[in-house]
Structures are given as structure tokens and as C-alpha cells.
Amino acid sequence: MRKTTRVAAAALAAVTALSVSACRSSQSASGGSKGDAGNIKIMVGGIDKVIYLPAKLTDQLGYFKQEGLNVQLLTEPAGAQAENVLISGDVQGVVGFYDHTIDLQTKGKCIQSVVQFADVPGEVEIVSTAKAGKIKSPADFKGTRLGVTSPGSSTDFLTRFLAVKHGLQTSDYTTVKAGAGQTFIAALENGGIDAGMSTDPTTARLLTTGKGKILVDMRTEAATKAALGGLYPSSSLYMDCAYVKAHPDTVQKLANAFVRTLGWIKTQTPAQIAAKMPADYAGGDPKLYEKGITDTIGMFNADGIMPADGARNVLEVLAQFSPNVKGRKDTIDLTKTYTTDFAQKAKH
Image (cartoon, rainbow, N blue to C red; front, side, top):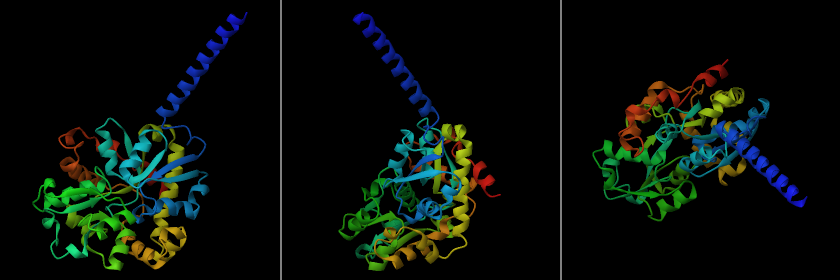
């Protein structure tokens, strides 16, 4: 009798385990089930960076809730780390640079930008004031230590592009993982790096204290075209293609919220925008934070739509400097790396 009971219990446990496994597999295939009821997790590659400001601003304006969504914003210091969390299925979306979608396609992953926030990087190559006399352009990178967010990040690829465009090899300088914010500032001030690529409000702090000077500015269309030869779409909301296909209504609601925010930004002053953001984002200096927004806010578009020529330019850059994309340019299907469907519908 007891033996029969144990066998039955073991069989029940096995069936339960198979059911749980099947459920998990189903969730993984659709990009996770947590977004089904409007509960969404989005990882931001540095939530206090001005280049990703639309993420938190949309939350602050209440647009997610007005769409019936419960969005939890999480943060990682670098986009390269944020994409890993998306691939693992722990979040439904990432606010990060578009170029990750191209890089991930070479690894057999279908990830696409569903709302394109910006057509330019919003990045600045900033040189230590102490080294500004010797480093006057990327042509002077030879023998220097250059800071990037992390190896394999967008800042890494852009730094490589600038060096080669000015006649150097990527082996002519040393790449240093400098992170962002205070870690980047400390690296520049302490001589850990001679120059590096960063964003506001970090850039604004270094300029205000006199510790850094701008070498290359990629916060406007004109400056970006001069530096990179064309547009370079950057900040975006990108998601797993399987999730987008399985949950179009949820994705549309996200697009509605974000595109509404992009339109709102175009009607406000930097001071009004800064006032909507959490106080701690200002780092104790509201005026400095406002300056960072002033200098960067022009990078954002008003409609969330990817410019096709910009996407092609990103591929051109990655084909030269991304180890994963180099030599595989012809295998990349750009049409699978972004969609304009949701942003276009959100406009009406």
C-alpha cells in the first residue's frame, strides 16, 4: 500500500515538474509572460543619463499608467550589460542604443527597436584639461588611454571609428573601462584615462569644474554627420521579436506612451523638463543638471520613427569595428532590427 502511494506521488511530482517546465518554456518563447497583464520590466542602460531621459520622464508624466501599463524601470550602468538581461528573459525591453540589435543578430537573436528616441548618439569625446594641449583631435589618440563605458559597448565602437577615421589603428591607443558618472569623472581627474566618451550630466560636470574639454561633440545632427559621416540612431526601446509578435497590444501602448513623451519634450524648456525628473538625478546641483539637458535635448526626435539611412550608417560603422559584425555585413537583415509600425500608429 505504501509502495503504491509512493509510486503515485512520484508520478504526480514528475507530471508537475513537466508542467512547470512547459510553462517556463512557453514564457521564454514569448519573451516572458509578465507583460501579459500590462506588467512590464524595462532595463535602462544608465537611467540617470540624459540620453535615456525619455524612459524615466514617461514614468514621471504618468503616461505608462494612462496606457494601463505597470512599468518597472530597472538600471544597469552599460548597455552591453542591459542586453544580457533581455536575452535571459528577465525583462521585456531595454532602453539602450539601437546598434545592439545589429550585433545580437550575428548571435542568432532577433531583437528590434520599436521606438527610436534619437537619431544621433548624444555622446561627447571629452579630454582631460591637463592633456588638452597634446590631444586636440582623434588624430592625437596614439599612445593615450581612452575611456569607454565598457569593452564592446557603443562608446567603444564609436571611439574605434573616430580613431581609424583620423588615420590610426585601434591598437594605437589603450581602451579603458571607465563606466559612467562618478567613475568616469574620477578616471579623468586621476589620470586613469586621458580622454573618454561620455554623456550628460557627466559631461556638464566636467566642463563646469574645468576638468575636461570637448574634443568631439555628437549631440546634434550637424556635428554627428561631421564626425561619423551620417546619422547614428542611438537611444531606443528595443525588445525581443518574439515578444513583440506575441504582445502587439502591449507594445503599442508602450509606443503610445514614449512617442507622447517625445512630443512633450519638444514643447518644453530644459528647466521644465528638469523639474519633472527625480530630484536625485540632479546630483545636488539642479542648475548643472539643467545645463546637461540643455546641451543634449536636441538629440531626441519627435516621432519615435527610425530613419532608414541612419540604420544603414550604424551597420557601416559596426561592420568595421564590431568583432561580431565585421565580415558579416552582407548577412545582416536590417529590416529585422527595427520596426516603425508602432511609432507610426502612435502618431495619430
